Every structure is written in structure tokens, then in C-alpha cells.
Amino acid sequence: MDLLLNNNTAVEVKYWSADFLAGNTRALATQLVNYNDLATLRQITVEFVQTSQNPVTSEMLGRLGSELAPYGLDLSKFVFTVVSNPGIP
Image 1 (spheres, rainbow, N blue to C red):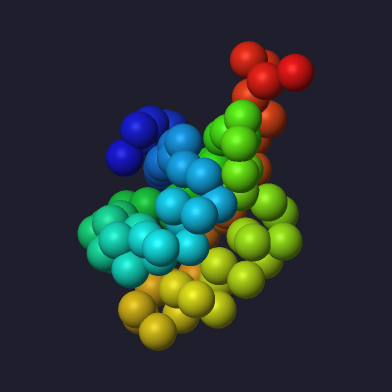
Image 2: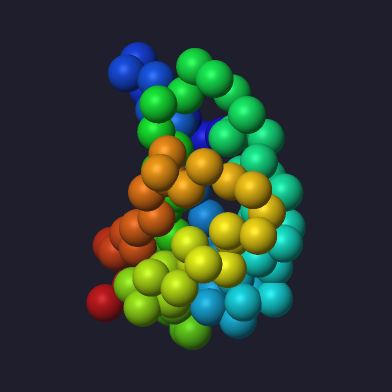
């Protein structure tokens, strides 16, 4: 967990390319299960920072929920977003 806000929200930041995300959904699910089990967390925001090559897209995040569903996550607690990287023109 990269950041814990005082409103019981956790933030996890990933600098993953689209290919890396596609090949590591299980690893992501394993990590998120640990956060999901923390009863004090109301929301878990997972931010994918834009990479210069092969960035994660909003469309990929739209499918991510269904790809993570088999791992037993309470997906209602999660927010997946793409964050622009100011270092990338």
C-alpha cells in the first residue's frame, strides 16, 4: 500500500505497462486480496501511471474487474484509474 488516507482509503500506485498488467493479473489479485481483507478500508484506489510505451488504458481497466472477479475480491471497494504522467509529453 503506497498511501493510507485518513478517510480509510488506501492508494496503490502501479507503474505497469499494458503487457505487464496482462501477464500479471494473478499477482495483482494476490496483492489486492490482502488489502481487501482489511476491514478498516472503505475504498482501495489502484492508480496505473501512464508509461511512455505500451500504457495501460481505460478500456483495459474496464475489463480488469471481470478478470479479478474469480479471486474473490469485493470489487465494490476498488477504484481503478489511469493517471497521466507529467514526464511524458
